[in-house]
Image 1 (cartoon, rainbow, N blue to C red):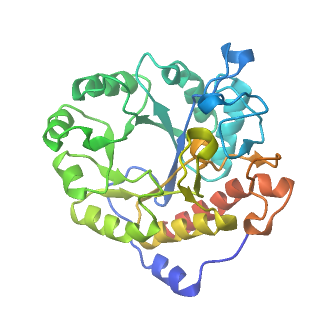
Image 2: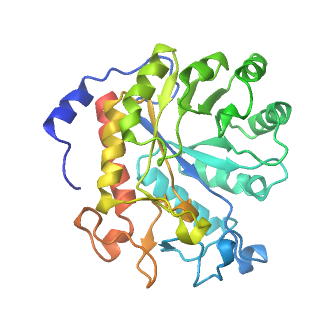
Length: 323
């Protein structure tokens, strides 16, 4: 399944102790998932695939082309297959992008929950910065999502609110955990978060993980650094910044850095954020689009699922090291 870690790194990982207080199994991984795609057949219009002036199904808002084509996140066959992918890759938790109670993402939550649980996956909510989000609306969001069986909450742009506001909110919450998207461990501690995660693989590369986890652990927090295969968003968003995949070397380096830093949980950016080119969902070769061809020496059909296969390798290694 590809090259092994260098001996020096492997010995370092074996020396990393498991941390107490984490309800997840030792060495578990969580992945960011987007239920926001739509098609004419299922949704009456192409949603997200058409952003930035694109015309699906052939022309999609991504530098890559999904192997499933332009799909709908309301299609139960697609969602079940995606959850099967994630479970087979050794991931334990699906962190679902959520944009408020009146959002299309919330309307699709039931489908995701059903499919995830069928494949023995936990579901967490990625609380996004929707228009009008306040600390009070976030409290209501969490209470609502608790009724859906969700207990883990990842707060994107947590620093939009003061640490004192988060602390006051946390004092009212019981039986759940919140994780702050920030590298400021002191802020997360003051806000009474359970831990920190990074999400952005451009700003927070693997070279920053050791310091982040050291600071988080000193504060008694869990460290959940985010790894990803690369970043390429020109077609999807117009962003010209790029983090090259280097035929899988970028993904390997970030995983090795997360494990070497003593990560409690590794978060993966992402399963299917096609606009930013961070996805590990299967892609196919289409003229004018990037592909996974050449990743870990794979080509053709084998290359299309190369990142899912490699994720299974890394999650297994993480469990072995931490278990």
